[in-house]
Amino acid sequence: MTLRTRITLLTLGLLAASLLVIGVAVYSLLARYLYDELKAELDDTLGQVVRLVNRGGKTLLDLALPPDVYAEVDVVTEPKLSVEALKEALPLVRSPTLGNARLRLSDADYARLLREKLIWARVLLERPGAPPLELLVRAALLEARGQPPIQRIPVVVLVGKSTAAIETTLTQLVRIYFLVAFLVMLAAGLLAHLLMQRTLAPLEAIARRAEGISARSFAPLPEPEGADEVAALARALNRMLARLEAAFKSQRRFLADASHELRTPITAILGHVGYLRRRTNPSPSQLESLEVIAREGERMKKLIADLLDLAESEAAWRFEPEPVELRSLLDEVAIEFGPSFSGEIRVEAPEEVWVYSERDRLHQVLANLVSNAIKAGARHVTLRVRSPGDRVILQVEDDGPGIPAEHLPHLFERFYRVDKARDRARGGSGLGLAIVKAIVEASGGEVWVESEEGRGTTFNVALRRAAAPPPPPA
Image 1 (cartoon, rainbow, N blue to C red):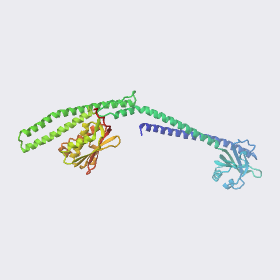
Image 2: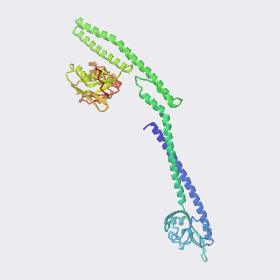
Image 3: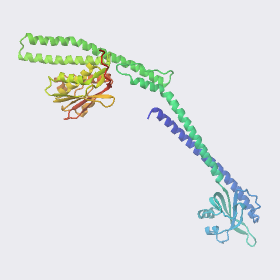
Image 4: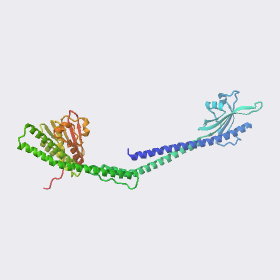
């Protein structure tokens, strides 16, 4: 997930959480306000009904109640107050809005009314030919004036009003709020995405340019205008690149100069060793010493040549890939190593397969890989060509002892040897595979190794497929 996406999602998450908290707060405050208003209205209506009942009114038709208010006064006929007595109370007066229906509380509400004398309750009013209506009811248990000889009689006064208008208002609020919140989220998401795109565009440009930086190219990164963090980062990276370029140039210059300077004394040493062998009559111990000097001198000579190759590959290596035909190149390498190899070199490649590289450099790659296989003790080496898709894969497969898994990630590092003592004895410099990797990457390809102890090793070189060049004009 990109940084732009993460920041946009984080912004939308925070905005959604904020909108949710605000929505819940607004909904709760509005619901509380509307229900408080309804309760105040029902309290006033209850007081009015109680006053009129105490004055001996027989009907509520004259009470001038609002048309949306439902009221009922029930007389408790049982001498002892109980839940059953309250349920069996007889209606004394009712508002016209009730018609033949009655306001009835649940058993639990009657029990609370018996204890508290004044309660709020929710009542589902059943209406003939119409859906049930949910009411908020204010219920009171009190004593009203009766007819002599009864001075006081217990009555249940119920006053209710529908909550449909409040619930409709709250439902509309939720719908409108969610619609507005969705539009706000959509607009915020687009704005956040555009803002992140504009903010991170310089970083993306820097990243693209940084991908192209290598030991051969230290082109400075684009520096955005302004004094923000992105511009400061670009300037810091450019200063770091300048220091790295200076360090690499100094390293390459030292490597090239040292290699050139070492060639002359090594050539002189080998020349004098050859002269002493030909023109003098050394003793056996002296001859042994001369052979050691010659062997180490040849190893040093090869090391110097490898160092020069690496220095050139990292500096001004003029590498111009061109179409190279593989079958003839593989046959050439097999013929070159055949006379000095007691084993077998096989070539498995179709005719007319072309890749982009330099023929001499690709020959150097194959020669290094075949030489490594022979030094490792292989008896059979196979040079194979595979052609999957738009790439061509060269394989150098051997039946040698294989390479331990812990060494595989380091094989292409400079001066790395799997068996240091044996490679040193055979003249290995530890730079051959590093040169192979440099050549292959300069050709736009890649190289990797597959190996298992006791089952041999396979080096794979993947290169871009090329079309066969047109024949020269007659």
